[in-house]
Image 1 (cartoon, rainbow, N blue to C red):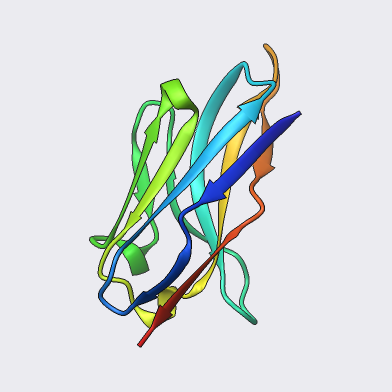
Image 2: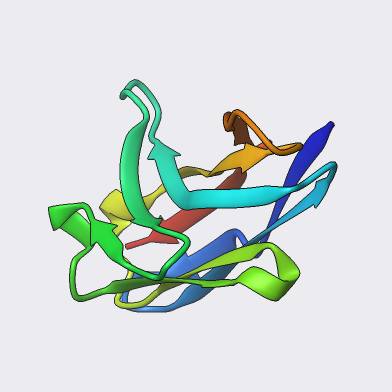
Length: 120
């Protein structure tokens, strides 16, 4: 079994910063892409940022230039540095990872979510 545990959410004023972390643990042979998604009330879950095992990244247009995704492969951990936060960034943020528990197929796992609230 694989678990993803997020931390770092909270309440921040507009213009402030937060750093989210997500650590994968359990039966892990290999991790491919890791990423962050978010879901605001009444809206669908959307991709925020993703990082491949080799380090290439992709961002939603709404966060480009403000958010930075990174990973520490030795720690099986992905980070999301969020700067210049806006009220519209308020959402539950979910960690996502493509993990191979053993040599063979990859499966998608999700964290439990962490609330980010930006006050205007």
